[in-house]
Length: 173
Image (tube, rainbow, N blue to C red; front, side, top):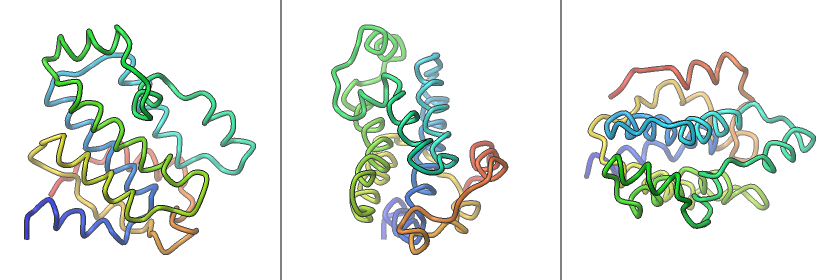
């Protein structure tokens, strides 16, 4: 079996929150590999790393309504000149970047207003893995305590320390 498919298969037991975090770790590696360093990228990542700490509708509504541009772009909005220039300068294909950003965003947004979309989120994670073309994927061990079978697919509630650990762990397979 293909290494990437085996990796995605191992993600089946993980929560949507864990899958999102893994996608963000892959995106971080992709950005490093492509020298993609810009405030709009930082804003996108910082925003999505806040997701695991959102607790209840009183926090969700303000968080969701404050989406940065790259989240909206991942949901299908047209590129703006700032992103287009950034991708051109980094010699990154806009379609590839859209596939990655869209995959990251859809892992969550595909399940926000209905039942958790297990297969959709796995397909989105696979899209991120395939289009990022990074050679070394994040080790899944730190994410294994957050399972799809818990909390209707979202996994256990994370603490600030959990999120900080996930974001900063550098152990790779």
